[in-house]
Length: 185
Figure (cartoon, rainbow, N blue to C red):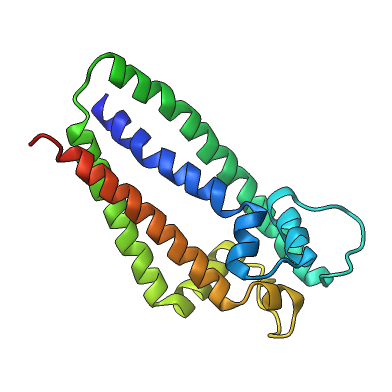
């Protein structure tokens, strides 16, 4: 049961962060741009977009965004289902008065390791970004000219800021869990 509690404590902040980070208002804020092209890109990337011709993106950019959607959708559904399953586990743990301090500590350590891995990805961002795309998009439709709309609205600094936001949010949860795990010791 304690392992399920730890996993539940880990998946819930990941779900919240995943959900919040792709909200249009957050993306516009991070991009420092309220372009309708961003909304269109999010529509393609998170919901597959529509079949109509697009005034913002080339066919290659649309193909890449739709490939993103084919990855985003199952990841989103999986994280959501895991989060949905996490709540009953945590409710049972509280009702059964299971001591959560060790679970908080283990979750904090796991999130801390994840933060360190993501910090390494940020430090080696060009290598991480290229490898990430080569692995997830082996068909090779992810490289675009610097003046393409997709690169213009989502430049490298955008992705670094998104990654930094993810690191910060996970770090906050890790710290909070660490504090809760060490309470009354």
